[in-house]
Length: 399
Image (cartoon, rainbow, N blue to C red; front, side, top):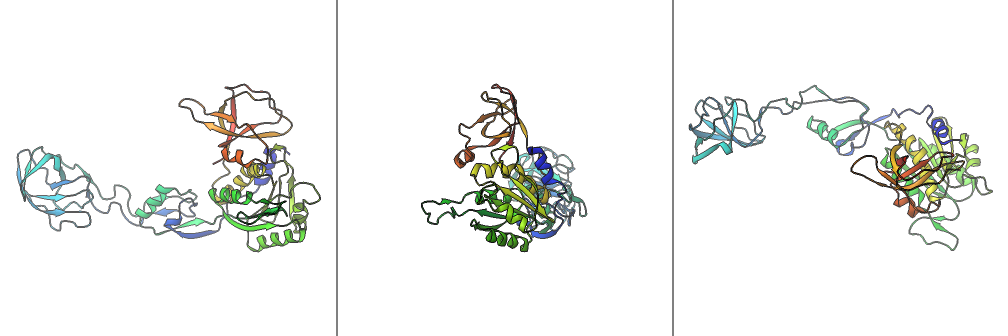
């Protein structure tokens, strides 16, 4: 099946999760807002000085005027009385403007001739250097809309508006199950015919970076009964997605598909015309989505970028992200084959025009070191003609 058709099938009927939860403001960044947020207070709540200087009446602060300084207004400690005609109040940035004052004479334009006597060197202009109450927002103003992907500025705005918590969409729960008798966890001793499991850690990082929570199902041996038990565990935990790693091909020890069928999963597709990552499968059981990934490290991560990442993002309310960007080839490439190629490549930003895309020299699907060096996947469609250096190309960012 072509990559585009497989992705369309996978995302067919996928809507954002509508369950909501309330999180503390410190945990809200990166989440999707579940309801509109209005201001609970006015900001600033009072007329405030925008500069250090003196709160005065503009009619008094003419060049050469001598004014007594009758007090101080500081942030958090307002001057409690009005500014009477012919007087001044020392004021600092952010401090409330005293009643009676209509401008701020900045300190650079005045001189203290005595501890409490001010000489005006440059006349003050009316209504200068004052932040009016409500300049940022008023109580009841609509500030943030439902569906917003919350960034640092949004969180700061919500805090300023008086919200200690925010309602957000629940993150999709993604259960990750590695399979294979040959796998052990990092830090464990390995036998002569074993390797260290790495793919699950990469997938977990990808899921969390794109709006999901991870349920680690560990490593299952090549035993169909154990696989079925782990899948049941994911269902009991109300996972939204189950991702299996390895065992997705057609060998005698590739038991993932039979285990999925035994659990009532209906497979939508099995095998995609792509390289690396051909033995990708996907299915569903009710609302539960299943993705079976190949076991070779680069194949796992490339296939996850193309299929798992957009599925997680859709469920999280972030949108699938079309992914493809335009660039310029750094070197000539040969014609393509019968499968779409996703070449691990480096991106070189340029001051002008499109970025240059440099294919990495080794593309074996087992080479995790090459995948880790890559910034992007350089896309070569099925039967792509040979391309010259400087020719436009398409790529998918890996971050």
